[in-house]
Length: 125
Length: 291
Image 1 (cartoon, rainbow over the protein chains, first blue to last red):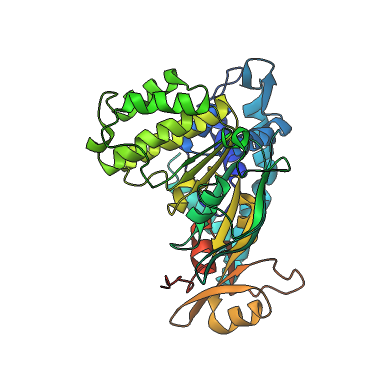
Image 2 (cartoon, rainbow over the protein chains, first blue to last red):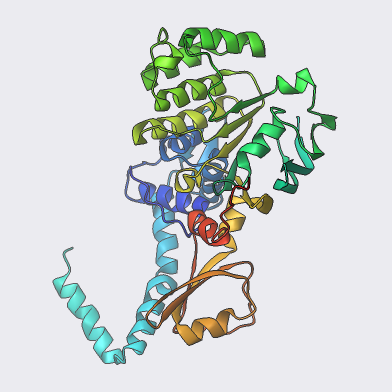
């Protein structure tokens, strides 16, 4: 696992995002334990309170759950939840930005659709 | 739980006022960063807190009791400083024993483990060790004494990158095992930016920032764009520095932005990291040592 931190976004959010990504890509599997705050804190030199705050974001998003006395576990169904959440934010996160940029460049709607089609044709997967 | 309060502390060396009316508090079980340029007064402040030297005025208290001539309080604090206080001929294991005598107990198990990890021979004489290893021996002692307040003055002086990494890991491990208050005074801001929960910035003998690390970052901005647009946008805001590159300008701001102001398309607003903020806040404030 690799954390890549930038210095400008709140650190606890980045911790949450990185953990979420690890769950989504299957590095942490459902119903299995994720590393403890101590492990993450130690390995990446992050204050344990920050790590915990990040984890709590994921608890609130119902992606992980605390099992008393053992640690944090990936919830069953977490991957599906992430997919659902990402689909919902896809429009706001990507489409709106693409359209804004296209308008700045003076690309017509038609041209943009053509570019998307080209993307599908050349796409690797 | 004990709390340390620094109350209007001023310290003069001759006519030179090194600390000017400093006040802040240290809460239990938190990791603090104490940042400042060379000569800002960091070491003086830590020395006063541990009564190695005295304040010219003001006081330091732990739970309303003055730290001065109070053995109980002093036994609850440890200052790891740049100065080497151990006799040259003293062996490392003897240094551990001495710490036990001074502080009543000592975590030998941890000390031996750390000594092995850092590659310190227990039978080595202190004077025969390099600068880096002097720091390491002192760090080991700092992490193994049973105190609730540990102050590090330049803890990683002379340590190579591997040993610095190891130190930060062991510090966090030790903090998780037994939460207590740490104050880390260092110039390597990037290395501790994610570790410290709260930051004090000392500039020319004054505390200019005393806030949670995240809150500080949240209030630090870099506004980049065409000169005119940037200047127009940041007028009246707390601009602490700027950079220009041809017609491009970046204003660094510490404080709240004006939500009412329209942000032009041509400018970009980003947050600044702790190190950059520090550099701009303390720019041009080199202290000249006066005779």
